[in-house]
Length: 118
Image (cartoon, rainbow, N blue to C red; front, side, top):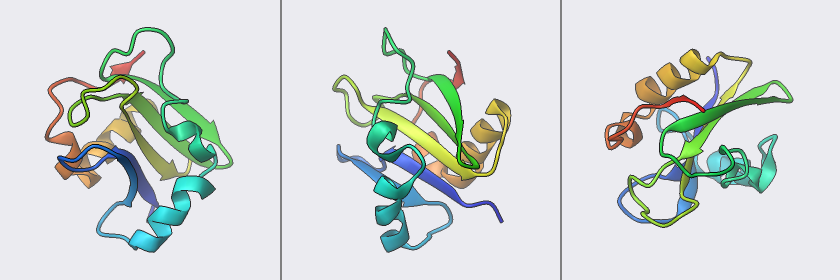
């Protein structure tokens, strides 16, 4: 089973947190906030540069992991609010979007935009 994580605003409160798919261990997810291959760059540093258009996403690969990163103001309306989906393994853009919708419906159901390549 692929390990999947989400980093961003998880619920209706602002503030970015790391969550593991399928009700995973919250302690593991908290540690992964800093221990993921990109470290704290996942907090906006992996999103497209320039205009912060919601849903315009980039995919990144590092140390056997894949990250799908994009600007997201579906909870926090301030600039620099972002979402990141991380998977243990190398996956395509389309696979990462599918993972996001299948494994984090509580996050993706609030999107009023599509996740598309930047």
